[in-house]
Length: 389
Image (cartoon, rainbow, N blue to C red; front, side, top):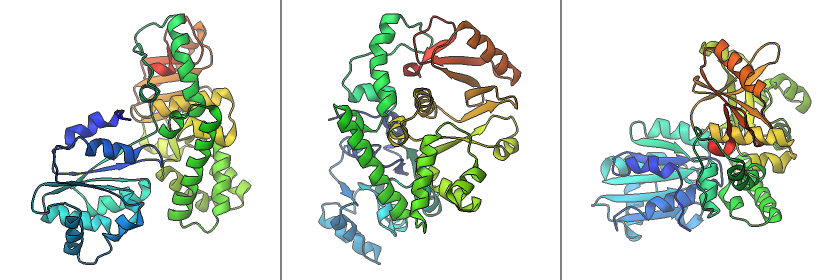
């Protein structure tokens, strides 16, 4: 399989730059495949790929003297005297790796391509050790265009400014409904049957819980973290009430805050703040949260179809920029505001009055660009579909 991820177009611009490339993201989003895709496109024989999940690969770095590590890599065919490229997958598994990368980068003509699952770890450690020596990129589950490529579906999606016919909608939407239900983890998309997809989602969650929560989290109350995850899955798209979660789980608000920070740092959830032109107001008010992937949310909680659709739209919009939501005290709200410029309201079916209401509410907060995202086919103006995002 040789399918290009959208992120490659961005990373490609920096392949010849001296800075190291770090790719992070949720477990099982395809980081290993992505690194190998880049590896195959580096026009050099002086390159090396090591998967650090393999204990044998980790052993090469178990030296206090970094020059000894260079000698170890030379045995594998890497010439330290020439321009070289070192690809290391799952870097969070080797504790001294950031300082080693810094040393080799500074003393040899080596460019590193690194991947890891734990965002909170990577951002903290690599910010301190590789300041000015790296570019950090995030790889998320497949968006819908990537989903179609993985499905080998020869379908061209009309842009958001193009009116969709009923025939076009029905052709594309059968794929999009599968995407909503099972999400965008590559290994899930590549499975043929619903049962296989569910088994793969279960395997991805088990892997995340064992390797991230248990392996990296250092939590004393693992069962509480598990119960928190299940509660969050049931309430995806809701406002985050830490005090209520604290009561339900029987732990302090500080503890809940720490757990939430970990879950967001490892990409399992994402918080979005209420819209305000005042940043301090955004921080003080209650955020909403969504799960990383609609298929994972559906697997853990069997969500209402409307909530599942909204989680899917969140996953697609988050790839385009900063997201907020807006809600009046009366409860009237706008589901998503992108980069403080564009308003999106998610509907199962949109009628003519929906656009008028959204227009009035968007203008009230100084936003002129707005669209309804409808799940079902609609003839109304200002309507687009999730697959057009």
